[in-house]
Length: 361
Ligand SMILES: NC(=O)c1ccc[n+]([C@@H]2O[C@H](COP(=O)([O-])OP(=O)(O)OC[C@H]3O[C@@H](n4cnc5c(N)ncnc54)[C@H](O)[C@@H]3O)[C@@H](O)[C@H]2O)c1
Ligand SMILES: [Fe+2]
Image (cartoon, rainbow, N blue to C red; front, side, top):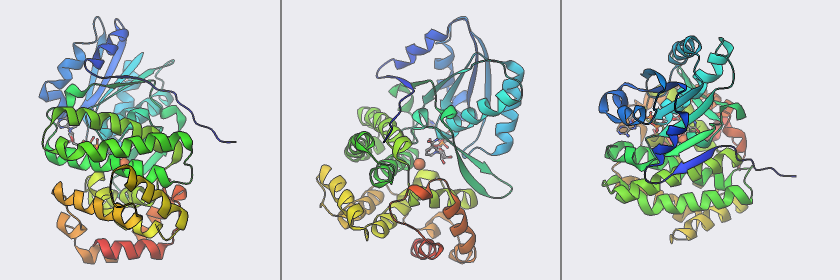
């Protein structure tokens, strides 16, 4: 028997933000980062919370560390909200998810309705049971996975994407393509996740270059694609690109999507030695009008990465290749222990990971 579950109700399209008005009169905690708080975008959210008692937590930073989650959970337990609105990129959404879980343990009372309002087209966190946190002391980034982390509501309003700078659009967009590609070949893939992953990949493939150049309609399509890819990987799982991106991201602080953009072509070639997986990659390439082979897909991803002015090697991100070599065993161990590793379609050894690291350094 197989199972595919949906929980989050999704509001999308122009003025989707109006959905927040359902929270009128409640105690609401908004979780965001300092940039969004100061940019004026947060005011648009607050304007949709009529008659609410609003507390704002603006302490989120990229790749949220445990200390920030702990501070936020304490603030949440003190405020005792009826609803939490997570507003921002994947970092704000994940931080808020973890804050609610820990906040409940610290005494935040009753059921808290969780609303996610993404401002990047990337992680799909608004529809996933994942929250990726960073243990800064150990330099480790790891995903929590629990159905309790699934938001009740997702609000996809493209208005927030207008000011996203090209570099962030490129990084987050490559994350979307990686979610879709990994979900499509993952061990947990089924007919539902395939439909979501195929649509997500084709939509992102078509729109990412224009979104990078600032086209607002393309950005709106990227937001949908990010959401579809999130549902796909939440059901199917991810793979080696994500497990290595988590292991590297905790140590070298390179944006998550930029790491996936570097890793995915290597992972496609590695996984393609499995015949069935190679056929799946070929099908994905065909759906986008690309040379219908796994190699064709890997090559197309590298070409796109170049068009988006992204690096292809860790050394281009300021990481010393000697350090990558010295930390090879540690990175391989972290990637193998990561929760995304078991769903990779081909089994992986520490040696396989070190080979990819050598190519990537
Ligand atoms: N939970 C999941 O399912 C999931 C999936 C993949 C990745 N992740 C995690 O999510 C995090 C990455 O999230 P992200 O890629 O969205 O980046 P992010 O949330 O770290 O944000 C990146 C930067 O973009 C800025 N930003 C956000 N919205 C903006 C806007 N509208 N205009 C201008 N600037 C804006 C932020 O202030 C920040 O400086 C990583 O920690 C990653 O591991 C989570
Ligand atoms: Fe990701």
